[in-house]
Image (cartoon, rainbow over all chains, first blue to last red; front, side, top):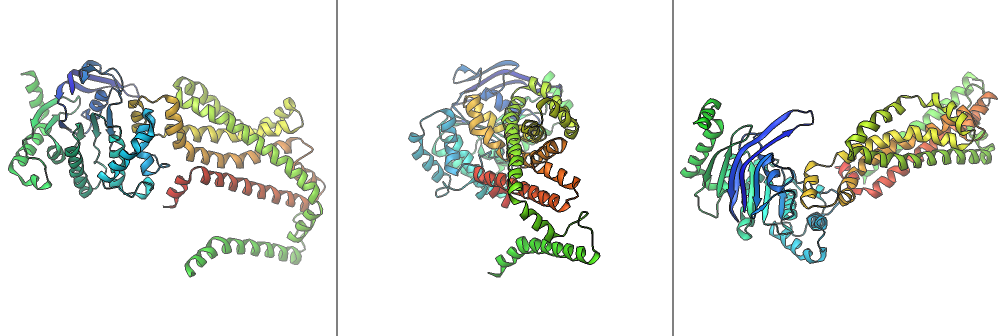
Length: 260
Length: 258
């Protein structure tokens, strides 16, 4: 589904400094796979998402989505950000329909689907409410509906539960898994929570600090459907330990490793 | 309902009561200390004189209102497109922004005589002074509002390959509306001040003219009457803008109340 080959990104900040965000990223994400991307803050995780979405061009290397080279934004993608960024003047229902309007699709044929998604995410009966009347978790559910309404093949999620409290966060992760089991999609999910990365993923991509490089790709061999009890599983702990040691490995070691 | 009653008392009765008390005190002080009428007139005298002059005052109020609204309208017509240009084009931002700030650093009272020279004694010169003071907050606040759209929403729109125009209409402009209105609220008050300043510099119409000519004839009571009308106009205009804001962006008012 997604294929990144030796992707490198350097950008210039507004102040004119050059930032080497990600370096030498080679990765393949399979169709309907759930891949999480974990790493310390500022390791270029979000940049990588934007590169895949075609929102920013790569400095080097190629990105392919469904065997087509990404040269710009393409609409077969759903976005979820850390904040729900709903439009405060629109009702819940109209916020879900936002994607349809912006894509220039016929609204009428998506109304039933919007209702269906709202009830799938536990928001039935909230159609006419405004975002301010909902809790942070519920707002993020609306954002999930907005990301799914046009049935994109690819979901890009940038720390979508990062702004929620710990309990809501866990609940939302399981909710997302449930939705994903129900209608499979390719998900590329950025997080800085190691347990979240393991709980959700088929594979976890571990990244090093800036410039972000792939330190390790971990195949998560845990049964689905998953639950939070898995965190007490020995394998879960082993994965968590492995990721932690990759991220917090002393820099000299890593540099030595890349040289070798 | 005692609670809503106490709220009513707090929000309305208390300030009204204070105002009445001040007026009564004023009247009493005037009579007790025998203050000369041409220095500070009694509230009763002001009311009587204003009533006496009511027809003329309405005419002059009308002129000032027209100058204010026309200047205000012009500042919207110029300010909003300017804000859009500044936000969308970095080149224009760099070219125009310093210039706009410079126009603000020039004291309007100082250039009013020059404007009079160019535009003449009529309403046009007042309208332009009103415009010059009012357009700045509109440009700045609208530009701030347009720039305040979350990056994520712009990314979302770009990924949908939505046109810039559609993104503007559906996302950026509505997002900027509360900012636009807070600019308008400042601007409407400033526009009125601008119009009066213009009238002070040279005119034969408007409430500013009335204040100036009344004081030169030692008619302080009439001057106070005109000041009262100006204040009333400022309050009504401000309230109207606030009302339109609540009608146009009800979501914002609701958010503020939370």
